[in-house]
Each structure stands twice: as C-alpha cells, then as structure tokens.
Length: 113
Image (cartoon, rainbow, N blue to C red):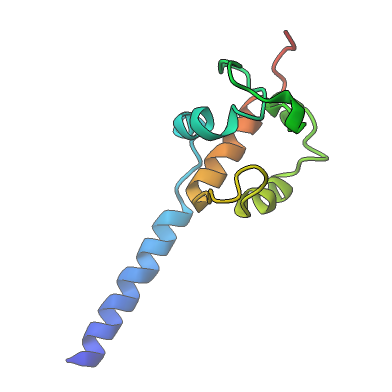
C-alpha cells in the first residue's frame, strides 16, 4: 500500500510541475507588485512617478525594454532572483519574476514620450 501511495504522489507531483511549466507569463498580472515595489526607484510607463527616488539610479523599465541585448531575459531573471538594494528583504516568486520580465518585454518598441 505504501508503494502505491508513493507512485500516486510522484505522478501527481510530476503532472503539477509540467502544468506549471506550461503556464505563460502574464504582464498584466504583476501590475500590483510593480506599483507597490518597483515604482519607488524605477520610472515605469503607465505608473505615477510620485514618491520615486531618482538618486538611487535605477534604470527606467523602458530603458531596460529598449536594450534586450544588454538586459536579456536570463540576465533579468538572474538579477530578480536575488533581493537587491534597497529591497534586500523582498523576494519574488518564480511566477512574479516571469511576469515582471513579460511586462518589461511588453514595453519593447513603445514610442518615447
């Protein structure tokens, strides 16, 4: 009986991982996290700049989007996996990271104001 339970668990776990891998990133799903955590340092198209601290020197999301050879998908994912200044105590989930990258990529080719 225990061996049967193990195989059921293993099959369910494998199916869950496969389903999660197939979920596409959603650039609109992350807007709340961006508004709460990113706008304090980054200029982001479509968000209010009130309270942003330009002295930190964080790049604009549009600048990141317009330079995909510099800010590659993998480079962004690696950077976002680790908490960064001034957000040392804040950790993003894997889906949040993919959604933030999808949001940034959705800005590519956007006309400059």
